[in-house]
Structure formats: C-alpha cells, structure tokens
Length: 516
Image (cartoon, rainbow, N blue to C red; front, side, top):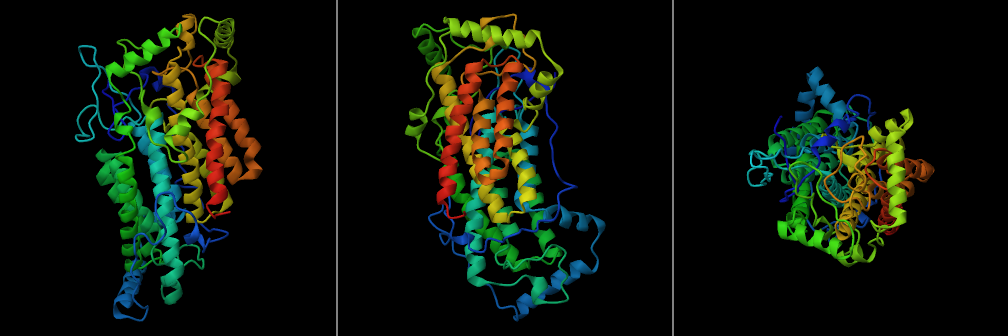
C-alpha cells in the first residue's frame, strides 16, 4: 500500500482509509472563468470592519512617488517592455490571474487540501505515526488536511485576505494613484479597466498575505506557493494593471497582515487538538459512566480518534464559552427505542439503495483525497460569486464570512462529537455496511450537516436569491450521510440546526461590518 499523510497546524490527526473510494475530482475554473469586471469597486471598503486588525492603518503604507518622477516613468517602461513581446504563456498567466486573485488562491487552496487529505498508514507494530510541522517532508507528510484542519486553514487564509484588502482599499482611496494604463496611453490595459486606484496593488496584497499563510499551513509546498505568488504579481505588471512600486507596497502590506494572523494561529490551541491516550480514555469513560455504548475506532488496528480536542480551538465568530453554550442536547440513548428505530432506518437505506441515493451519497462524500466538505462549499460559493461580479475586497469579505462560519461549525461539531462520544450505526448493527467507509470519530452530530447548515445560512444572506437553493443543498448533503449508512437521523437533523445557528453568527457579523 502506498504511504500516506497527516495534519493540523502543529497537530496530528486521523481519518478512515476506507473513504478513499469517495475521492471527488477537484473542480477548478482555470479555463472558463471570465475576467474580473466588478459591477462596483467598493471604493469605501477601507471603512469596513476588519477581523483582527485594529483598523486599516495599523500597518502604514508610505505615499507613492509622483507619476512624473523618473522612477515611476522607469516602471512604466518596464511594463511597455513586457508588453512589446508577450509570449503565449505570459498571456495565459494574465488571463488566469485576471479572473480574480481571491478566486485563484481559493482554488489553489482546495487543490492543496485535496493533495494532503490523506491519513498515515500504520507502522509494522500496529501503531500510527504522527506528522511533524518541523519536518514536513518526513513520512507521514505534514499536514493531514482532514475536515477540521481544512476548515481552519480556509478560514485563516480568507480572513487574512479580507483584512489585508480592507487596509489596501483605505490606502488606495487615500493616495488615489491611477492605474498605469490610465497614466500613460502607451501602456495597454490587458484586463477590464475600473476607476479603482492601483496603489497598493490588491493582487500583490493578496499574494503577500496568502503566501505567508499558506507557507505556515503547508510547509512542504513553500517553493510552489512562492512561485504562484510571483506569477500573480508579475501578471499584473505585464497586464498594465500595476507598476513595480504598486506591487512592492502591496506585497509588504500583505506580509504584515499575515504576521498578525499567524500569531493568532500559533496560540489558538489547534496544536493540542489531537489529545493524548489519557484524553481519549477519559472521553470513553465519560460515555460509559452515563450508561451509553461509547464510540470506538472500527479500523484494524484501531486508529486514534481524529482531533478529539478540536472543540477547544479558539473560534472566530464567538468566544469559547459560546461553544459550550450552544452545544446541542444529547442524542437518543444507545439503549432507547428511538435509537433502535433510527438504526433500523439506516439499515433499510443500505439494503434498499436507489440510483438517486447512491448519486447523492457519492456527490457529497468529500472523503480522503478531496477538498473536504468545507472545500465543497467554497467551490459552490465561488461559482455563484463569479456570476455576482463582486470586487476583490467583497469576494474576500464573503469568503471570510463563509470560512469563519465553517471553521466555527467544525469547532462546535467536534465539541459535540467528543462530549457525547456516540457510536456509529455500524457499531449498533453490524449488518450496516456503509457505502463510503466509516469516519474515525464519533457520530453525533454529523459534520457534513453542521458544515452545510452553517454555509447555507451565510451564503443565503450574501445572495438572497439563492437562499432556498443553498438550504436544499444543505439538506441533501445531510441526507447523504444517512443514505451512506454513516449517520443516524438525529445526527443529521440536529447537525443542520446547529450549523445554521453557527451561520447565524456570521450573518450578525455581516450585518455590522459596514459592507452592506
């Protein structure tokens, strides 16, 4: 068997190898995405409420040189030099990044998550190895980008991008330097033109902040990430959208903002989310003391549970006390008639599958080797945001809201899972043979349902005309886990409600961030 991989920014994790059969093809839009041509440049976005920054001026950006200085004229000549002999490959890069840097970096994140979403194979003695952020190239590779890890990764990058662009928009309006193609008629505008000032370059801000965050989250990909950042920035120079000084100021601002987010990431308790054997035993003992059948790993040999202490990670949208306060009530007792009925229902689904239930099960599986359920909702959002013609800063704000909701949904869900430590349907009835493997963590509540409820709530607020469609997708994603034999009805129904509650906090933030 091929060797595999592991996880969380300073965390070791686990997932079921049997879910590899559910691998979902990564859905990028590299060729078909249109050029970004926002219907509104949101020129006042510098006044929007950031996530971590104290304000848009926390990191100063010096005033640019006047457009009639020799240095700036030399920068215009650099652009003309590129445009004089652009190759087909360079034109492709301009078109690729011209679709929008928030979109493209999100696609690249989804690809990295899918690449690293592989659990480690066991050692010869039946134990499991753990990855090390200090040595990411040793087996198992770091990270194992499982659902909680990926939700957190998407959130940190999206939130950092948003804060960086809020600051950039402040300085754009303050300095009001026109784009090179508007300053010099001999510079061609190879991308749609707007009235947005070019200093500092928003694409360079995004390259700076995203590259620094991604290097922390995927330390084995530093060369690849840096290559993409340089490619993104150079494409804007070649396109006549930014000068070298626009780029340098933007990249520096992005890196400063990244430092604030990486400092938070190093202290949010994700590094302790794997727990210890003592922690795992305490969780099992607690369930047993309540008279319940506890969850246990069904893998052979038994694998440590996936991030049992992830519920203690620091959320973005509310505080740690709220995680406990909104924890759902208990599932049906494992000895109750209700649980017996719910188990029988799952057995019936497994014994009587239809082409539609099988399709739904595999469409939403998002298991090992995929961009995970949070990534699936990022892909759904990206499709709709492209059609909405948002500005880069509004793209970033909306992605930040979505991904902070998904991360906090993971925290609330994992807190619930390991508080109740409820068994999977297969444990209560061995005749239940799942269609997509058995995730290596407790059943209640369903992660897919919680993620989907949160995503549907905030996306429905961002694009009200699609609210019903998002709710329908969330319900289908939730049902898919019953159809696949992975969850009971109570796991899914309560998970949806819990996720929507988390999504409600994202909506509250959206209503008060100044963007609407």
